[in-house]
Structure formats: structure tokens, C-alpha cells
Amino acid sequence: MEALVELIAAIVAFIFEVTIHALVFVYLLVRAAFSATYRQKLKEHWNTSNWRRASIVLGIGLYSVALAFALIVWIPLITSTDQRQADPISSSEDTLKIEFTSEEIKKLKETKEIDDLVDTAGGIIKRKLEERKQAEQGSGGDP
Image (cartoon, rainbow, N blue to C red; front, side):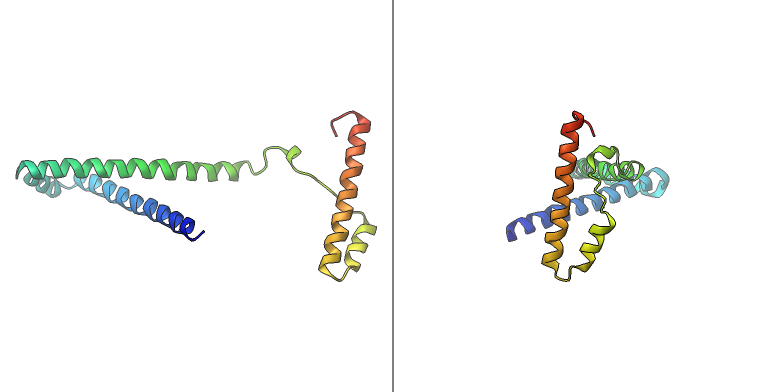
């Protein structure tokens, strides 16, 4: 169990670290797009040596992978939250609605022990479900 918790913590830390690198890459792209002095500095680094060119290309590649990974992780999370807020319950047939009568509510209020309350409520719910099953079988299917 401890190893599983450590694995989950490592995955979450990795996702956040990659997200930070993706944000740094976006910052560097914006800086290169709008800053003439930064573009001049990049040109000077590019013209220094072949190793420097390789490191620049490798850095751009790694930052691009980090950005793609962050987008793959965060976009579904953000869009799924919007869908859940727009459509909280898509179908009402998945929910089971049981209403208690006033006598049953009185009976539940009179129970003092939690075990007795659970037993009483469970018995009432089981009885209601049985009544519903019998009504569905008697009517031929759909409630």
C-alpha cells in the first residue's frame, strides 16, 4: 500500500513538473516572439558551435514534448469539469427514489441507537424495493 501511495505521489509530482516546464516553454516562445534583444541573444548562441545548436534543438524538442504532455493531461480534465457542470444528471432513470411515509419517519425518529436506526431504515428500504419489484412485475416491466 505504501508503494502504491509513493507511485501515485511520483506521478502527480511528474505531471506538475512537466506542467511547469510547459509554462516555461510558452514563456520563452512569447519572449522570443516579442523581444528583439532576446532573439539576438538566441542568434548569438546558435552561431557559437554545433554542440550549442544541438543543445538548442534538444531543448526545444524536450520543451515541446513537455507542452504536448501537459496539454494531453490538462485539457481532458478541464473539459470534463465543464461537461459535469453543464449536465449534472443526464438521465433520471439511474436514480432510485424512495419516499418515506410519516409513520416510517416517526419510527426512524424514535430509534435511539445507531445500529437500530440502520436496521430499521434498511428494513423499510428493503420492503419498499420489494413492493416496487412486485408492482413492476404486475404491470409488465417499465415503472
